[in-house]
Length: 283
Image (cartoon, rainbow, N blue to C red):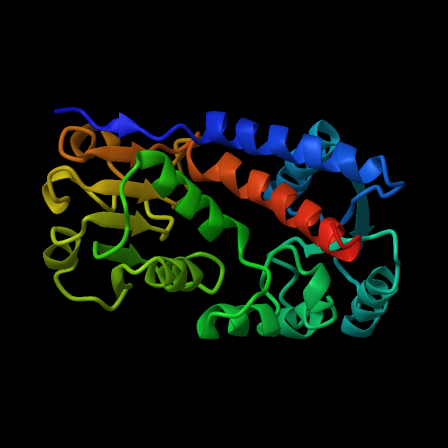
């Protein structure tokens, strides 16, 4: 048995193609979706991520604006810049690239982004809407996980999903989206004892930790859908949480790293931006 790989690259291209068509329809009405990236400092990984997101905007026809701010910026100055963008009618979506320098208050900065422009779904109002099941922006990485799951053709209703990781960016919202899809959800984390006893029960296993080789084949239920949402580096190479060689022999479906959740996260960002523009235009 060898797992069927869930191709995030191909699916992301399909989502971007759909976005391109939607953007074209908006442009016919004189509306150009605008997405602003706020980059504080020169963190190398953040610079690369923002560059990749800008390229995706170009492919989809979305106007992108990158506001680069010095690492030494004060909290007050950062919030002033965010408030300016918040009031710019040509900007439909805003994204504060994380992490930001440690002297800055991340939560306070995100609170300056209007919930209706919060393409990342990190604003407390959007996070709360997910908890209570009302309309709101959803975090891009968890949305990508759900679309990869849909690609497997496995109906999540009634399945047991195990999510490893409890971050507000991936783990928690992914667990809530799976719950919304009628899964029975177990959340594991760094304090969980005997992790394998939980992972072996999972029909759907999502790992979002960032620890290379965390999940091995003997920890996976035969035929399970395994979504690797972790990012780690080993000897300069990008890898995920899943030890692919052994897991691939047990799982039914597997999203690889790279090529799985990464491109999906960026594609979902495009989808969120276009959706905001359409809502504003009453399309």
